Length: 312
Image 1: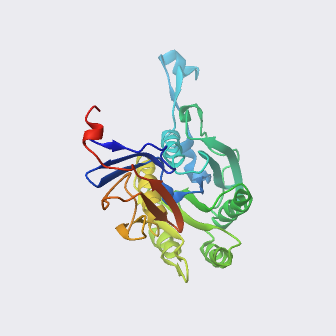
Image 2: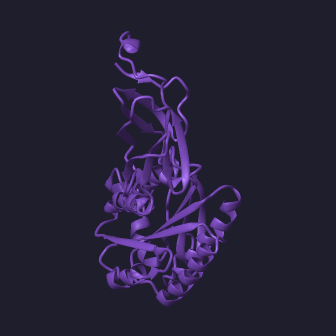
């Protein structure tokens, strides 16, 4: 009973149906984050040592006495990073994420793990940094991501989002704020693409007021650069990050659907659902989805005729 589109669906649509003037269009990927380049920075300070430690499993008392474990169990960070990687890669323009430890060495060093894929994530190990940090400096980690984005723009990145996970006090809040002002200036002048940053605190040593202070800042022409949440346990991080990314990356997005005469058919104020449903007048040849100033026009079948489709 459904008329199918005869032409190949136009990206970002994977499937379009028309029945009695009712259109049902399925999105292939989230066009609100078109060209998004994501990164994930894990706290490398010494206080995270326990979280990165692989627990040894001993089969026998003798094994324990001679420190010969039968296996190493995953540390608490690893499964969470793997899950985040899997999810965030679905938002990323090329499915590769920059992953690094921050706050290493004297606190300002970054240890880049690499550009990791979101598939086969169980192959990746996250044993912690080579040089655990003695203080927690966020500004160098922010600078690292911004420099990375400058390169990625040349390769087609149009938007950025970096996630920073920390378990303690940040020691350079004022420097972070100063640098954020510079980032905003460059974004408004077109030298940098639009970027957002997510801070996730974990455990009871996190200074909530401090994170609030960083994230509360509003910048004219941009709004909030940062958002944050605190997870009581390491095991809550992956889920929290997924929610925050969804909220952050679609705040200013939403979308509008027009018919072929430019009439507005439907407005999505916040995020786009995976399946768009709306009604068109008889004889409508196509519809257009507008997101972030980008327009995607999808042709419709020439006629919506039950008889034509009874054999389906």
